[in-house]
Length: 127
Image (cartoon, rainbow, N blue to C red; front, side, top):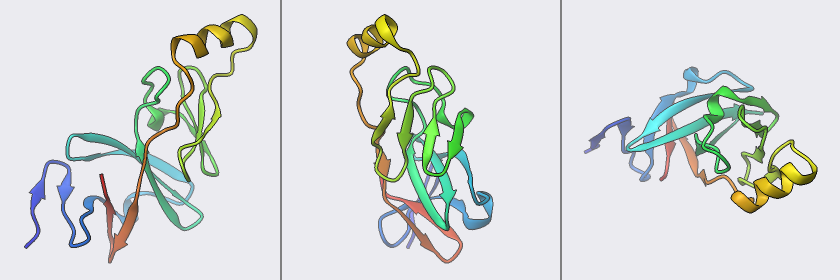
């Protein structure tokens, strides 16, 4: 029997249902809830990706940023992360002293990503 949870249902594989396959168009992303977590869900090249919806730099809402391939750019300070594994591509678009201060304030750290599976038309994220 499946359990209901705020933001979705647990699937048999332990994932939490966050959306249906028709909810996210190819090359796009949207913010969804998985229990208490805000998740960025993206559909790129026929694959789904899930990550924290907030930038680890300054907490910007990544769903309001831009997406180019698997690279998401934060709308606040233009930090970039690869949704395929969470790697930092660019910490900010600042340079010189501003970049040094940004790295001192918050050292670069990856974006947390989550495993995604599809069961029928249900998109499941394992937190």
